[in-house]
Length: 472
Image (cartoon, rainbow, N blue to C red; front, side):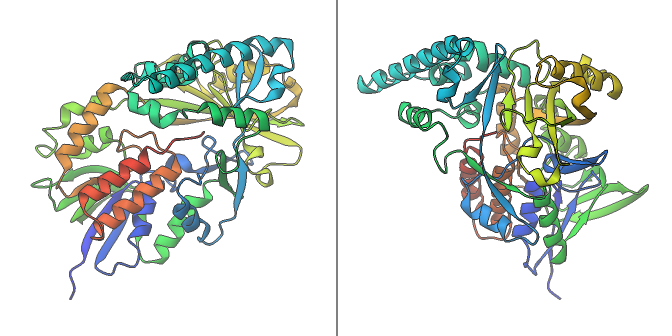
């Protein structure tokens, strides 16, 4: 009888599911996914509550990885809509399109800031061109320098930095995060966008499933199950034991009140490194135990408002000003109108908070009331237009990508190098990935486990996929 290599994947989000998908058809492998939640998808789920369907934030599938898009499109039941990113920035009582559009300069209230921001950006880009022409090298080694040189001082200080502090709790983030997260527009690109009044074709478009983004992980799970792989939901890991980090690994988990045991020759972790370290039994985790605290994250409380006869000015609008409690509004009906009741807009409101902070400790009723009043202060609709209001708590939704985290990540990756444990996905890396990055990384790990590529090739390609610019 042929011996099968037993692979256990921890976490059935987009990255874990794509690892399993990439290993389908390998008769010499036995694959099991362990997921603590009652459903697959992680933060990419589409939830149902109070008669409404909505995503945990404005997810999208990027065309930057065309092979991934085609694989997703080939799954049964997937109907991808092609949409254009429509972003806005709410500042000083006005919604500004980003990239800027001519209509933003048609009112006296917006002309002042549009002019100031544009002048600051042109100055920053001109200085960059002069440095290039003069062959003077400048090392933009800090997060702050990169943002300033990319967007100009006025926009950075009035919009970008306040927004960054609001979302991540600090401005002292790692410089790699600036290069990954924020688009660095050239003068030519911005002028073309401005004159056209819209984004360039293919530059700022995305794909979205007609049935909600959660249809993607659901379809992936259906496929891997059809190929004989096992997905255990509500599987809460208690401990992982092994004599060495090369394995085999003895995994104990609880499901439906009973303790279960698995043995894995190889293990893929798509969960946070902090959680993984907590699962590893001593002395296996002793060398990296002190690093657990270097992986902080912030909670998102997602408020959902169903509003009658209203349309948000853009699909996604960010709110950098600190007196506004939410950092982003997105309009789910503008992603897939078919999932929303007729005549209603479904507004998703992101409020980021730390554990134990004011908004974290509020009861659901208190939070709904505070959030509703904050949205009403915008003056976009009246109280009687709000049909429903509720919220969902999403712990660990925003990893804090500071220097300490990057240093700890390097040490953990070195610790697991040449071991039986492979780290994969957003939570197990220092890349702030969207779903398309996570899926791309998952397929690379599958190629590595299947013996198609070596470890160094996997790491190099994962760094490329993980550092694709993110538009959300």
